[in-house]
Length: 385
Image 1 (cartoon, rainbow, N blue to C red):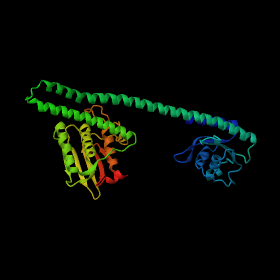
Image 2 (cartoon, helix red, strand yellow):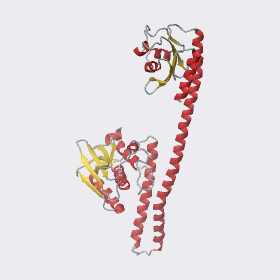
Image 3 (cartoon, helix red, strand yellow):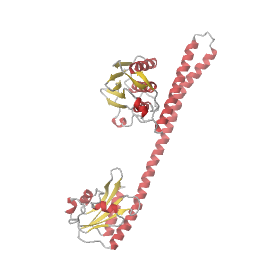
Image 4 (tube, rainbow, N blue to C red):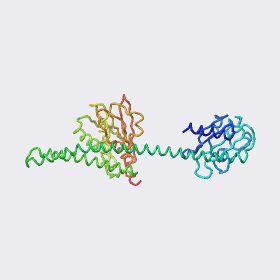
């Protein structure tokens, strides 16, 4: 794109018989004009000069008027120009707005060494060239937007395919286990010793399915821009962490520890916090060093509580940390882990933010990875907000 703009400006410079020419495009985010192409003599000076849209500058005057703006002599003009341009050898400037009457895209101007005004024919010619350049810019912008949209559509397609595959895989396991247990239950006599164990197995797997559906519904809510619903009541964070550890030990064995303060109580949503702690601790098992412990540490401060979940093992790549809390993000990989939904950490962040708190991550190959969730001791104002 830049090379094509340089070529276009070179053609315009030659068509106008000018010594230099420059194209500046407007950036709404910064509200500045940014040089995209500059050709001819004093190119560096023209590039340095192009920045302001203030009305007391030459570029601002060009941007503000549909008619062409002329500066007969940059040395004596009262308009703002850079010192570098004043003594560059370029004296007279002719600038036009792009486009003249529609949404502002930028400006184009030419410069000549001699001190002189520009004829009406030169002005009309530059305006016509500007209209042609505007069409080129519009087409280039449309092309870029179409390419961006195609990339987004392809990303969404791959995401859907991956999500469907992982969903089918993860649901098939507990459903198959529950179904087989129910079939065995039919064959067991009323007094059979296996009956309670089979019922527990069915309930556990149905709980897994229910939790997955709950996660999906909440992610849909988040993507629609809605916060997680909270049911706030008095909550003992130490007791909650120990419950999570007890549940996880049934699956992963005694690899968990709860450390730190005992009197960490506050007004929180118990169910959401339990899911967040579960996701953080299970994340540590999935991606931490095999067999290494996962530690939940609790800290109580004056007005807030802090939960740190640490695991040793490979560090999270720096490039992945920025989006690790986004839905469906894959922040790190481990050979022992099957492809996951990428929902757990997104729900952790949603839980923290719904409580008017925050979550962050620090990761180092020598120290390990620590996720830290900070919560106000009383989250009831978040409901009012």
